[in-house]
Length: 412
Image (cartoon, rainbow, N blue to C red; front, side, top):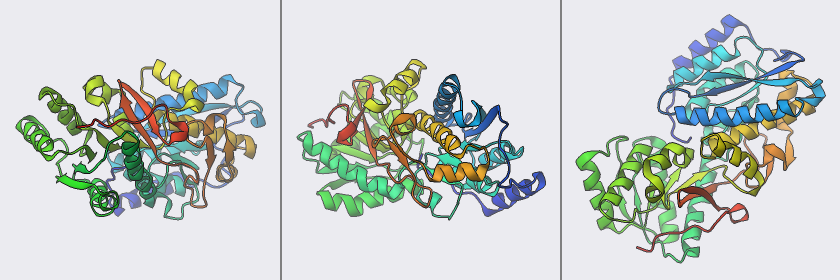
């Protein structure tokens, strides 16, 4: 998840004092017994991001169950994995407190979460202090720019994601026979969203010949009642062929519903993040309202991960990066444990850093079907994935090598 809410420095000082009180996490900490290896999962289970937390929990638990049923960690005598879950909450302070509590016992070998950039920026300071390997699917460039040794980010840089996704949109429109020359920008007040809108207007619109016919910053949650009808009237009169950025999921839903109520074919959105590839999103809009919406993510459904995608669907969720990536990340930890032949956190950390996997469950959710990290701890191989809702189903439309169908744009 890309939106970021940065925490005060005082919060980190308090967290570090808490760590000092409960003792340091030295390199020799075992992080598990010979029979059980504990993996931490820190995700939001309450508040506005609770759905993403439940998605991450499902994917991680599926991987744990598969590994245990297959005999556990072979190099550790068949040791079984145990998923220890904590609620990351909503605020940065919630996540820092939860991470401090989770790692206080010293028996967590490695962990995953939170899926929220700002919360992971803060909470990872705790896992770094405790020398606990930590993986997450968040995009903020600053996550891997701090020289941390124990943090591994499985998604691409946010800046690289933009460089790939907007040219991809232009390519997909062209292949669909649409000359994309009128676009609208409707960011929220969050700095990540406003910066993205500025980037589109100053870089990509001139590059691709897009005329920005609408550029309004919306207060998240403000698209209700008369505001909705007035906004949709402006969208319709602008002639925009695509809408970019989006202020918040409820606002996008309200705009789509209003366009349908006016008898219009909804203008397709190009949005960022798995919340737009979720069950609650399609349930709120149905096939008609979600039709054509494109979300830029880091993982999707392709032939290599069809089996786990089917299991996720059977569990009542929509396969997206929030359930697919933790599934992969647990398998990354499994492969690292096999290579390290130990639960020593430093050895596991080094094994994660050295991963160079092709195929298998760990690689299956990524377009390259592979796993490798660069020296900063960021994925060295993962790229932007574009998912489009087509007839009520999320379909990978980019990159072409793993696309399930071609993208379409209404010819307004």
